Amino acid sequence: MKINIKFDYTFICKAVLHEQLEALGLEYKLNNLGEVEFQKKLSALEIENVKEAFNKYGIEILANPQNVLVERIKDVITELISDPEKSRKYNVSSYLADELNYSYAHLSSVFSEITYSSIENFIILKKIDLAKHLIIHEDFTLTEIAHQLNYSSVAHLSAQFKKTTGLTPSAFQRIIKKRQEIE
Amino acid sequence: MPLTVMNIVLADDDEDDRLLFDEAISEIDVKTKLSLFNDGKALMDYLVLPDTILPEIVFLDLNMPIKNGMQCLKEIRANDKLKELCVAIYSTSSSEEDIENTFVNGANVYINKPNSFSALKKAIDKVLKINWQYHTSALNRDNFLLRL
Image (cartoon, rainbow over all chains, first blue to last red; front, side, top):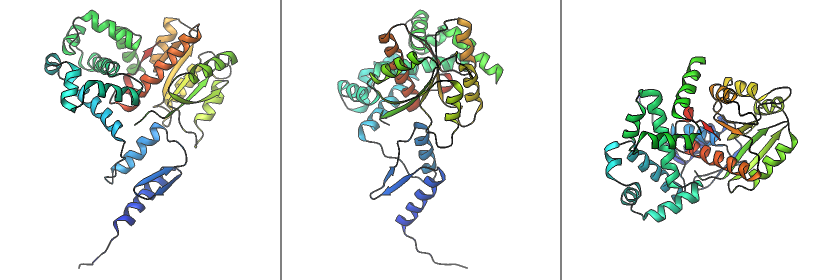
C-alpha cells in the first residue's frame, strides 16, 4: 500500500527547533531568517547541548566569519604540531599564512581580538596538551616527547611545561595516576 | 565562539578577600559576571538549583566554616550535573600536600592567594583566559591542571 504525503519544510524545521529547545528547558524565541533568540545568555555547556541537539537533525549553529577563521587557525596549528615531520620542516607563522591565505599579521590580530590570547600562547598550550597526553597514555620518556614535539631539549620542554601548568611533568604524572586510583 | 560574558562564582568566608577578588576581576578585559558566596554550603545550594546557569569557573577557598572547599570539590566531582565544572582552588595554604591533594581530588587550578592586588589580577586573568581556551578548543579538559 502507498500513501501520498505533502510536507512543508519550514514547518518541519520550526517544529524540530521547538521540540529540541523545549526539551533543553531554555527560554527562547524563533525569529525569522533562521535566528533563535534566547532570553538569557547561555553558558558554554548549554551552547554545547544546543549544538548537540541540533546536530542530530543536520542543523548547525553559524558563527561569524572571524570566529570561523579562529577555528581554522586552531585546526591548522593542531594538525601541524601533531605531525613531527611537518613541524620540523615548517615554521608556524609562514605555514599558517600559506594554508589560510592571509598574512600572519592579520591572522594574529583576529586571533587576539576573538580569544584574548595570542597564537603563540595557543601553540604552547596545545603542545603542552599533547605532551600531557603522551605522558599519560603512551608511556613515552620525556626525551622522546621533546623530540616528537620539536623541542630543542628535554630541559626546554620541562621548563615550558612548568611555566604553562605550574607543575613539573613528574608531578603532573603522579597526580593523574593518583586520580585514576581513586576513581 | 566569541568571548562574551563569563559566569564566575567565588566562595570565600573572608569579606576582604571577596571584595578584592571582585575588584580584580572587574578590571580584567574579559567580561565577567561574578556571584559571591560566604561559605561552601551556600555555594552548593546554589549550584544544584535547577535553574542555575552553571558558571564557567568556580573559585573555592579551602578553609571555610560549615562546608569547606575540599568538601565542595568532592561534591562537585561526584554530581553528574556539576562534575564537568572547572574548579579553581583559591587558598592561602602553600603546603605541597594540600595542593597535590586538591588536584588529586579533581581541582583544575590551584591559586595561592597572592599578596598584591596586581598579582591577584594577573592570576585571575591567566585562569580565565586559559580556561576559555579549554572551553573552545580541542584541548583535553581531563588533563587541565594549573598551579599559580
